[in-house]
Length: 443
Image 1 (tube, helix red, strand yellow):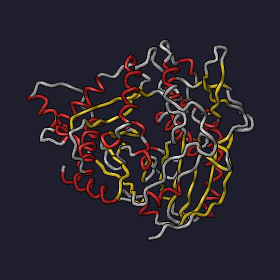
Image 2 (cartoon, helix red, strand yellow):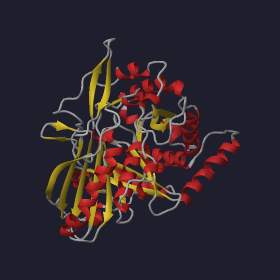
Image 3 (spheres, helix red, strand yellow):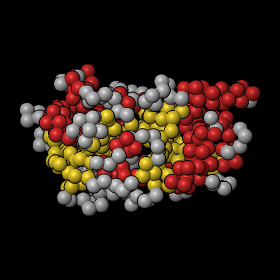
Image 4 (cartoon, one colour):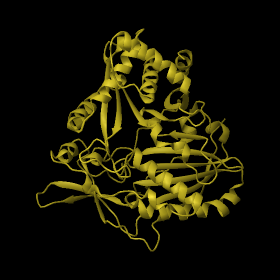
């Protein structure tokens, strides 16, 4: 089937309520934020059943989407701000999110007649078919750090696409915003119990990690023409999702722990670790790697409870550290691969500490020099993406579209299976076919 054209109905911006003023005009970037400065955005697509015509959506649903967005931005106002450099008396460049009452985010409304049922399935879907529903952070030469696109499929469904600059916030914070926006739209009022904590002074930096990590980020603000750009998409690239049920995970965990007991080994072995293990091994097999090199898995861990003093759970911004697991290729695909890979991941999680932040980020950047042997991750089952209900029910599919550019492995809670994990990834069609074969046959 050919890709249906997209009809833009409205291209505008949504700002803070007229009676709202940001409590802080300057929100400094911390060392957790600055590393992501200038990198491509994180992009998510939320698919919802909505069997009503476009006219109904525009007249009865769109107004509440916009008004609730404005109310929520009043609390999460850094999303609408502008990142800019500031120069101190010591001539050291810092960066801040500059916030005013006139700030806004891009908001686009479109209509598509493509096959909603196919696009919202777990099946392999051409990335080129999904890309039109992803909002851009740049319009007419002007860049923002947060953008939304709502695409209506008449009498079928709605897709809400969200793009966010990672330097503004991490996945925990961006999903806090989305959950708050959805709840405000659903119930008509903002729940004050979900107020974000925007005080960046809570992040202490006694060893000046900011200056160190700033040197790893772009030295100049990205230009308007090149800001947030990613390489062109492979026309053969497809995006698909796979589910590990609770029974699958428990079965795999039993195999791992039985081998650990035989070897008197002990390590962290959670549901997410098991999901990472299985997906990593399957990913390597699907690519048909023949290498004696070490393979690496790079994922991030929430440091809100790890820093001293700990940050509140509703802290808004970035607060993640790199976690790196490495294993020899022969061990990864060996008969004991499940156990050895789980041990490598589990021990790397146990070794996480604030004291290793600098060391781990240096190592992470070195790994990007050998991308075939590196797999990164995105998302988390803890984000509860399938609980995002704007009043039309829970989403039937959530995709992290940006993995089609980064090559990362996306994880989320399973929508349909309690205790399960959903794994999403983008691969060329022939590699995806191999991934599916190994994924299914190994369970």
